[in-house]
Each structure stands twice: as structure tokens, then as C-alpha cells.
Image (cartoon, rainbow, N blue to C red; front, side, top):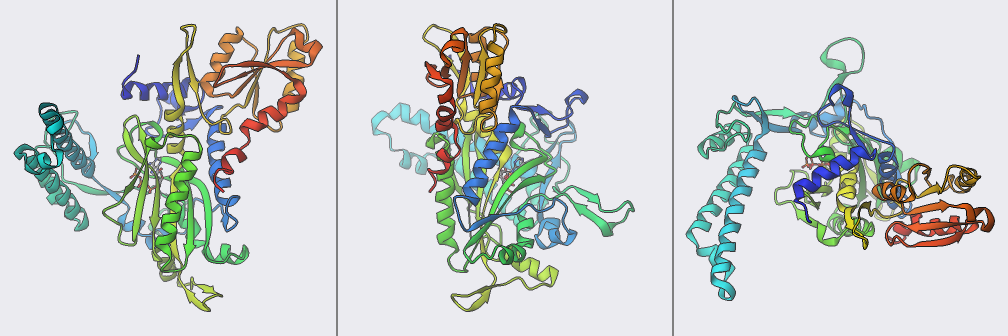
Length: 515
Ligand code: ATP
């Protein structure tokens, strides 16, 4: 029986909690909106995803090095980057439900609805006309389709003009004119739209006052830009080269939705690649390709990904694309790849008063490097991993199992060691095997319940190998190894366990696909 996307997503969220992947933060106090904690199974999976990214940047590329900048930065950094003046969302409140919305998202939802109406008309006509149906002509001539399309075009142009010229009244007027209502109260009783800055602020010192106000960083990238010269000189890097960083970022997302998709505290993995001016589009295309390769190497279905090129570019960018994944709630941004020109380094040069230039020995010329950025959210990647790999399977004997088919090198536990009974020296032998493996692989000793139930629990967290220690093991120094995916069982000598596990779970299996 297939379940709806909505039910499947609920299952993912419940599974994350039940099996110790992700919990709501401060749950005993009823949780904190859009803030989550990772549990004992979530942490190794998250670490493995981070490690896969980190090594793919710093090991696979000899010209990419790492950095770990502090979360607190000088307040002027955020003036220079444009976040103080421009990092905001247009918010609107419904006076009846007291709910707050992003005005741009209300209009985008309106556009989606018109688009769905067009789709419906096209499907109906296609059924009616059969093989002779000319979709292109129908879309160009059918009066109802044209009417919906005109509404879409007008909404998009009001949104673009309103945001670009900071004319929020124009956007509100459109919402009222089109009777776009609050989904909770069903009314069109809206406040005016206000820009709401997404940065959290705090104080450096105990005293109050504007001077020492700090921001929690809303992105990790600025820590890379301000350290450009430090890193370039000390690591003796020549252009083109990259600096990679992973770390927490904070955004006051008002409309937090969809579990760990949109959080107030989250982790980013960003890499800034510095290139000669004029070569940036070539590098942009190269990074687009190489990041998609990285995603596909994990075994994700290619049809679950798509590129979404930005039509509307930030003023400093000359190309930008999102890698979108098909989450159960639709295609959404997972990663951004941006060609940011020399905007960031030039702004920091201007605001700090320090010269930030690179002397190119080949050209014998100094210039401000251009930047290609790749930026992915670790929590979104985690959510993608759960959505892609969590499966309900019906077995030959009619039973069902829930299995997380994550790539073995990413699995939180690599091997579960199971003494058949809790006596007769079997737990001791299980311990001995654990000691042989645990320094290289995440292992877990599973003692309770029938072997069948233990298999189910390990399937649910994606453990590639289950190792059963039975009475025969005491004589033949061998164990039964069961494979998560094929469910086949075979007898393996204890001395052969290490190479067998390594042959499947080594991270290099993924990394070697990227070379
Ligand atoms: P969105 O349009 O979804 O708000 P964005 O364009 O603001 O995302 P970027 O500023 O480009 O996102 O950040 C880079 C990446 O960081 C995103 O692709 C996403 O994976 C992740 N990210 C951004 N905001 C959040 C958040 N609130 N919670 C979790 N991950 C996030």
C-alpha cells in the first residue's frame, strides 16, 4: 500500500524521534520552535555526512584548505556584507488569526495555485483531445489558461518591483486586491508589511548600548572572506584555490516549517573558491558539475535532483543556481552555487581599510579575486538522507520491515554484534569481537530480544552488518554475518570480519568516485 507524501513525511519525523536521530529541543518544556537536537544515532550520521563533504573538499582537492572561524565576528563585518541593511524578509500579520507570514511566500503560493489551475485545464484538454492534442497551441490560445497566466505574470512582476524598490505597500495592495486570505482565519484582514531582519543580536560586554552589539553569524561565508589573506599567505595558496568551512549559523526564520528543513540554528558547509577575474563562469560551471557528482555518488536517484537557475540575481552575483531535491513536500533548495564576483572581498577592503589583493605571479599583476561559492545546509542534507533512504519493504514471508538504505559508509552503526543468548560465554566472545572492530568502525552490541527483532531494529537505523555469535562460534571461530540490503546470511571467520566490513563502509568508496 502506498502512502501519501504527507504521511510519508510524518513517518520520517516520527522515525527520527523513535530511533534517536533527532528530537525537538527542550522537549520536556514543550520544545522550542524550529530548534532541534541530534540524538545518539543522529550524531554519527550527521558527522559522517559532514566528513564526506569535508574530505571531498580538502582531500580530493589539493588546492582547497579548511578553516574554523568564530561565530562572533566584528559587527562591521555584517555592515560590509550587506546583512545589516538587506538581510530581511517582508512580514505581514493576519489581524484575526494573529499569525505571521512572509508576504513574498503568500504571493508565491498564489502563483502556485494559478499554475495548478493551468495544469488541470491542460490535463482535462489532453484527455478530451487524445493524440491530436497540441499542448503548446492550447497554452497559447485557451482563454482560461491565458487568464491564469496573466495573473501569474502580474503577481510575479508586482513582487519583483515591490521588493526591488522597497515598495511594500504595492505588495500589500496586491494581496488585498486578489483577496489572498490567511489559511487559518480565512480572512483578508492584514497589517501593513514590514521588513524583519533575520539576524539575532547579542552583547559583547555586560554593559548595554549599541556600540558593542554583536550578531550571531547568519552564514559561515564571511569568516572565510575576512581570513582570505591569512589563509592564502600561511597555506601558501596560489589562485585558483578554495577555503572550506563547516559550522553553525543562526537565522530568525519567522515561518519555520518542515522539521529540520528550516531551522533557527543550523549548520552550513560552505566553500569559497577564489579565481582570476574573467574565469569565474568557467569555474562556476565546473563546480555545478562537481557538486552534482558528489550528490549522486551517495546513490541518490538522479531524478530526485534538479538545477534551478536564478532568474533574479543578487546585485553582486553574475550567476547563481540551486541544487533542489524532491522532498516529500516538493522540490526545494538543498544547496546553492553562486558566482559572487569580487563583491565580498572589495566590501571588506572598503570597510576595514585594509588592502585585500592577490599578487598573481604568472600575470605579475595584483587584483581582487572573484569568488565561486558552494553552500549546503547539513541539516537539510540530513533530512534528504532520511527521506531518500527510509523504506518500508514487504518480505517474501509476508512480513514487513522498515529499512534505512543509506550508503554503508554514512550509516551511524556499521556493525551490530549479537550474542545469540546471554550466557555460555557468548557475551564474552561478542565483547572480544567488539574490541577487534570498534576503533575502526562504529559498532554496537545488541543483546535483547529475538534475533529477528534485533535485525529489525538495526535495519531501521541502517546498520549494514549484523554479526550473530552462536555456540558454534566458540568452536569454529566464525560468526553469521547478515547483510542489510540482501538479507543474506553467511558464515565468516572472525579474523575476516575487519576486511569484510572495511570493503563496504570505507568513506574512500565514495571519495574515489569523485576523482
Ligand atoms: P531558503 O531560500 O530556503 O531560505 P537561502 O537561499 O536563504 O535558503 P542560503 O543563504 O543560500 O539559503 O544558505 C545556503 C544553504 O543553507 C541552503 O541551501 C540551505 O541548505 C541551508 N539553509 C539556509 N537556511 C536554512 C535554515 N533556516 N535551516 C536549515 N538550513 C538552512
